[in-house]
Amino acid sequence: MSTQNIKAIDALEEAHRMAFAPFIFQTVVSLRKLGIFDLIFEKRKKGGITKEAIAETLQLSAYGVGVLLEMAESSNMVTQDENGQFKLTTIGYFLAYNETVSVNINFAHDVCYKGMYHLDEAIKTGKPEGLKELGNWKTIYEGLSQLTPIQQKSWFEFDHHYSDDIFAEALKIVFKKERKTVFDIGANTGKFTIQCCKHDPSVNMTMVDLPGQLNVALKNVEQEGFQNRVKGHQIDWLSENPKLPNGADTFWLCQFLDCFSKDEILKVLQTCVDVMDENAELIIVETYTDRQRFDNAKFILEATSLYFTALANGNSKMYKATEFIEIAEKAGLKLNEDIALGEYHTMLAFSKKPNE
Image 1 (cartoon, one colour):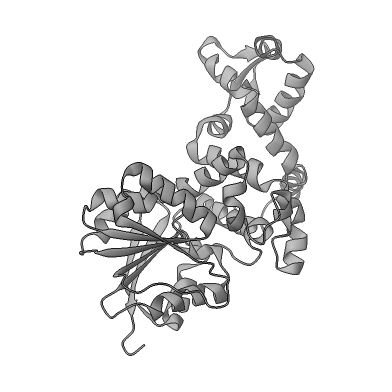
Image 2 (spheres, one colour):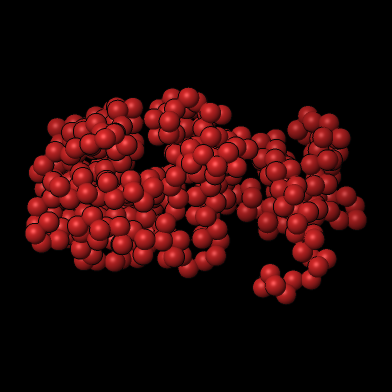
């Protein structure tokens, strides 16, 4: 529906919902945490369940359950019949049980919620002013290994949810060519490195990341028994002159470059180009805002950009594919393949331009 043609009364209602959006969000979180969504869903075949029965079953006050259900009903999460029996709407069901929605809710609540209060400060300064709600670091990546267990769980589930599902498809494409030495840049917990080792028994991997994350990834690799084929290379991409070792035939950068500003992305890619030979390949996998089939996917990515602004580093975002291609060409790379991957991702494969 065009926002230009919306009726004033409908526009005003939407404006009020936006004004109280945090109240609605916390209602959702509470309904999930307290087990109210689950109990209503369990009673769906019996015609629903009353407020009083919910309170008694979950040992909560009827008052507390009541205020939550009133907001839930006004927000179309639940319906109430003439007998006071509550049922989940389709919206309520998705809020309770859709995997992507659940991952997004936990990430927003456990990682981002308090920090987003400082969004306006971050816009002014270009720094992640909300990060102080989590810890005393320059960027969130320095502190990932120091977050609380709940925060770590929600952060990594969010990160992995939008990458793990495409690994199997990506591996089939990547290993159509012989890969002897792969640099997993931004290795995170080492999941992709481990998948590569399982997929190809002869490939050697080098995980490239900050020291804290690299230690975690190396432990995970050792637990899988691949330590003889995997090395670690510590790097701080924001240092003055980051360096990579020579010898890689493949550079894998998955959901990594969106963690940097355009100038920093250029710096990362130029550092890779410096150690690439004419046969090496650099592969970027991202969720680009201009490559999404559905509006809700684009919306999620644009919301994620605000997380980068307020908490992650203050200067990065989710980019368009056209922006990455332009930066890569400026870094001395030539685009060879542009492949849709899964529901959200695009794989861009580059080689080094001649005479670079």
